[in-house]
Picture 1: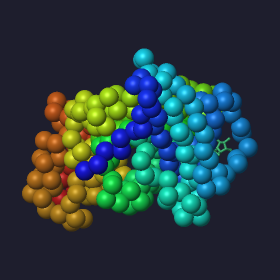
Picture 2 (picture 1 turned 180 degrees about the vertical axis):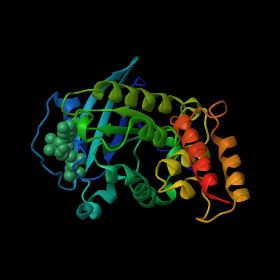
Picture 3 (picture 1 turned 135 degrees about the vertical axis):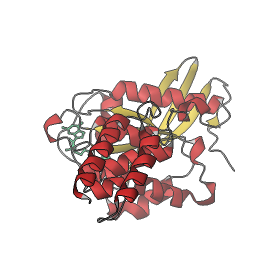
Length: 273
Ligand code: GTP
Ligand code: MG
């Protein structure tokens, strides 16, 4: 499979890379980029029309990196414009608004759109992904907590940062980590270094914790049908306990998920004859 090999200039120490921003409309993609490049914040919403393009130069170790930034419009109306721009990216900023759960839930479909548009060229292992949990300054309206966001990101081998384009929190750290990981990847022949994706827990564990957090009742939490027997409840419980026991699972949120499963089992067994 092809890698998205970056363009090199004659000078071996300089690199040219392409990064794109993805996420629902109004989550703050343009403001994050503006905060980093222009050190300012614009409170008024100015929707990106199709694509905004900019270039910035950064220094990573002994290399000069010329970064071409393609800031995508999040509104579905602009799909026909942005779909041309997915190819040949070395980095993706995936942004959601911590106060809007639907913008977090939409991250999967943004990845889906990207894969679809990259077609046979799609090699997600040669792209650095950074998840920005943005607008953390508006803490009172927070709908997605850090554990849940981090779990989604890290279980996929993506970086996770809490950011605020308004206050500047996390923005420089996030971009420094982004560019340094892209440089590492380029120096590693266009492959994301393995260490980044090894997070010490499995995707099954991460997906199970997410499912438990979003379950609607105790039956749903244990993954059994309402009216299940004691044996069925105990069997489901044992499977989850093995997967999520805090001694065995280091995924963020595993302890809470494990406790929730124990409580769900106890409350179901109380009512089953
Ligand atoms: P599209 O271009 O339509 O896809 O939107 P976008 O994701 O680029 O959003 P944009 O950066 O234009 O920001 C949308 C709105 O959110 C604007 O009113 C910003 O001022 C506001 N905003 C962006 N980031 C933050 C933040 O960190 N905190 C707060 N409080 N507001 C923010
Ligand atoms: Mg924008």
